[in-house]
Image 1 (tube, rainbow, N blue to C red):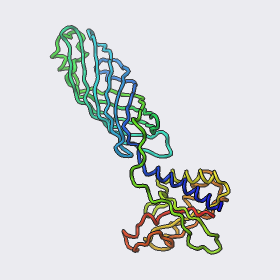
Image 2 (image 1 turned 30 degrees about the horizontal axis):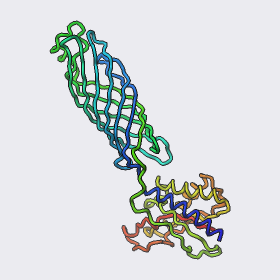
Image 3 (image 1 turned 135 degrees about the vertical axis):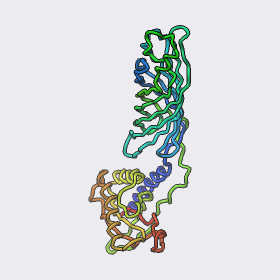
Image 4 (image 1 turned 60 degrees about the vertical axis):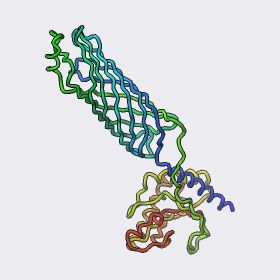
Length: 343
């Protein structure tokens, strides 16, 4: 009875991890509040300046997020007679995130478009106001969001501003036409900022149907082995002809490792299986490699090898789903699995 209770405890813990894995990403809306340094294009003859941002965004998929962001900066100008220079604008920023469950900070690429407004004032009667399209690219690091998230970013923003009053006309600021003739077609600024991400509302529970519940069933008889409680590690599956762990399998194996450490008297057999495609001899070796992958990961996480039986590969001899041995029907992911058999 104790053996069964321990096995069911392990089963329940892994089931919770599998249910959590069904929620692929945090799709809450979030506010961003940022501050940083705007390294100005010095062709404007303006000084570097602090700037601030305020935005609203969300993840559209597990790897892509979209933010709308306002920015403001007020650089000073070294041009003679300059009285004020103000920049502010709005952008729509798309980020491609490279997320790993083993990292707390994940890198991303940034692609943005927007509009920047410049307001310049010089001597009386010499001023300019205008809106100009802008494009932005950059890189950054972003943490996962719990109560709050963190983002650090370095970007380059190019404003297609071909009407700027040239700061090189120090001797004749009244000649606006000549000043515009001397202007560039645009200006590029470097933006370095840190931002806080504030999620709105509670994190939603998984709404997608959960993966198949872990199955507790008597294993097929094995000579000289006691009866077993078999725990299917649903979610720890493999791609065709592969024995490497998928990223979504790591959380499930971490849960199994944690429960094994909590119950040191529990011993399990690590078993690997394949689908029904291919040669039986090849599948036997592939199942052994998959069992070895799970076995090595559990040992790496601290489970003593003396508590793990195997790893054993059973090839295609114990399918959960009977399929024709013709592609693509034989490529049933349910059969490409690993199990922990409680001893």
